[in-house]
Length: 263
Length: 318
Image (tube, rainbow over all chains, first blue to last red; front, side, top):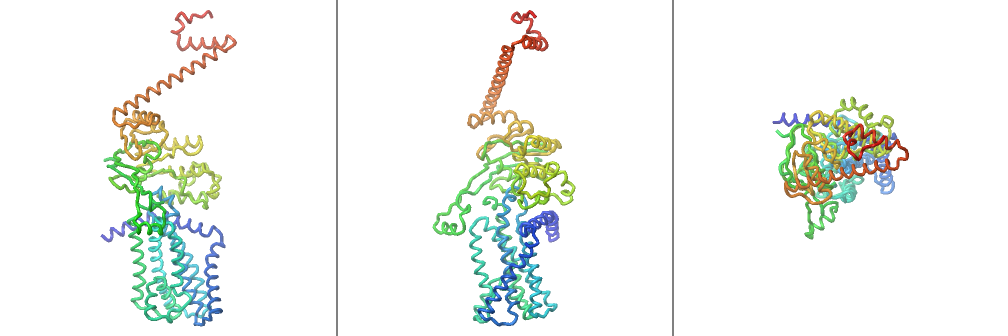
């Protein structure tokens, strides 16, 4: 039974690997418009955001907590990845409507390829993140490898949420604006530039309902404090990732042939 | 075992509300109970089956549901009712000039489209030159796609799509792409593919194409199946007559009548044509100032219809 499913999976992957690589190539070309500066810009833009936040919050609001730059950057890094992957994922179906209406290909491929290009962008920023950590005198250790865990969880969650959003976007075009508003709200609720310990314990627990915050907290815990979160914490992250993936897959499965009516 | 079998297939579109009203309005309408989904059946109760080697022509005026039926057969749409079974790989040459990426080069678009159609990288590497040569785009390979003319785009789309080796081929109005020379080339290519004993479906507004290529015929009108038959000649005749009279046939007799009317009309047209031709010739002869024109006519008669010359009226003193 399991071997049969696996066999089918391998067959599907083999069948569509070439198409997938071509789609990823296309997304890269669209994104960076074939300029070296295009790639540079995608690193520069989060750095500039970081710079502004750093100046605003240390100079004007007088925040003086240790490793504040790393604290800020961790939040920005994860949030930017989440934002880019889900926003681009949202339009992945509709942008390819011309193809979907004419050729019978698995629709999730368009979403996955958008996620790959967001992931690559994230990895580039991650390199800069490590450079900043060094400048901020963070101690590096083997525990840093554990950062792979939140990254994997994020990727899975981004795909899941991207599935939900892209499906919704086919049915409701105004989701785009609503989601932008939601993202702003989410950014403020993710404790990117403030600390949560000043809130009551109950409020702090409420923060854990925000999956992006949960991922950010893991980053900070590993990088700044050098502390590995509890196993329950790991489970919570896996739950969020799989929960959204399950919902997204269910929607795609149910509406797979309906999308074409609304395009 | 039929290669393609449709049993009571109905395909539904959803129109009216929901389509791009946005979430806010959707919620408002849902709350106030004003939310309605309108269904539109683009196909209703279509049944036919074709065997290996058959070529099915689908005819019908605009909005008859031809393209929708093809989408259901290729699996892009799911029939709301009924059942479609197909055996073998399907290649669909629908109107494909759209869906290319404007900011990519011709070469990149060729690979992407090939991948979308399910070709492997090795296959494309081997066939790339052939595709470009067929589309006559050798000098444009590294041009951005948006720099091409619309004719070039359609040519590329056709060239990529026709390099297939499927069991079933589906053609939707693709044989009328490009200029005259290219149209001839694509027509030849198609005939070459079809001659290999492939099963196919052809949608065309060019009735003579249907007569030439098809051995089965399906007539749709506003989503309803008017007829499915292997008497292509009769049904295309009836269809062409229908296009003039706009009266749908309701029975086999109506079809026969329409077909006969068409044949009669064609005969009259033919006679009319010969008559005008004769008149034209006569005019030329009458106007001919020298004897040579008359002499030439006489020689032709002598050669082709000598029996006429023995009649009294034709006794010439030449």
